[in-house]
Length: 473
Image (tube, rainbow, N blue to C red; front, side):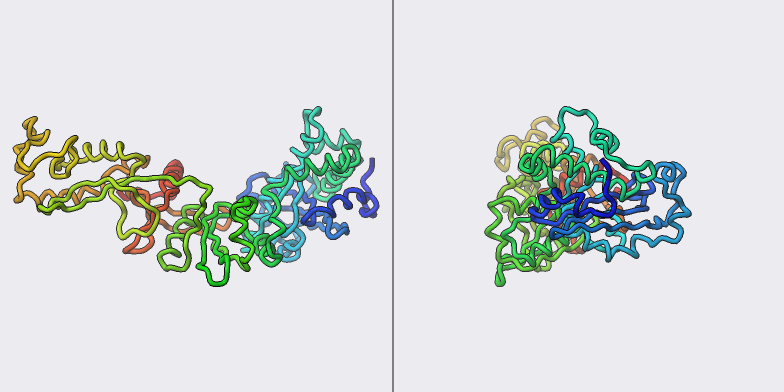
């Protein structure tokens, strides 16, 4: 079989007819790049075969990657430094390219590669981009499970697709070869079987048809990066906010849940506040809550996670005593004293902490049983102290020591560190933001902290990547 270069409408008529039935136009995409590193390498060539409202159109650009092309890449793709010397940079064609891919289903062989390079290239131009994708590698596996190899070379050989050696690993040549595979497989498997596998592999899925057209357009313009989404379900309702790690993917997944549909039909617009990381996005949520600009979204499908901390309350003798309490999401006037996953862990930690810093367990009320005023505590009974720490005269000193060492109560899974300063760097643009974390909370300003049940787990993960972390205490 040969690829028809000048009459795509006739060559791919059957495929175009099936793709026309889909909710979104389709862009079959291939990129050539200077290498495979998503942050360091750049695009050298883009090709798109676009199926839009029943029409097929070709779009291709040779690009100057603004970095050297290695001899290996030149040998593989045929694209040399001399060829791209006077070609436009990605930024020069970004506005022309965007409407050809935004709001489309992106189809590519190993789509993660092409999709990620496109997202990053747009991000460097300060343009949000995301789209649903379909990877034709698993698509080929589903249709032809009897075959072991599903790379593009194997598919070209299997279907006898005639592509010149000079066109293999060039963007448009690979796009046309992939399109011919789709046409051949459609002919062999029938439309019903072909479409069933196709629809099952779209990630993260289409946005629902019941959304208002203008809202759907807003959502298709979201990036697939961390940030805060803000919306109003109805005109007079408060603004709701939701932390997202991959905004477009997360919102698509959310809206496929029938339980959330009642909140969205009246929504008109959605705002997106970009973040450098999910930790930064949670800081943004705390900040917007502090400013009373929005309220957090209550996801009833996610079971609540409980965390515990220690509060110190004065008794009628003005002695500060320890109480284990549940730490709730929200704004705090100071970071909590310790962080624990279970009350038993808090009790053990309190006992060890009191011994380490010479604090009276009886005054703290953390002995195994309640003690009367004149009844000896375990330390006194073991002749480890004379009991004077329980007298009124010692109250002030005990309270001062307690408040001095309370910030050193253990923080679950942080090891010996209690206070951190983290620099969150956005990988693509290299933008930086500095966050301060203490006892599982993040500082919002000089007087306020924010706790969210996700923070302890995220901070633990961040500690495994100690780059850009200053261990304060």
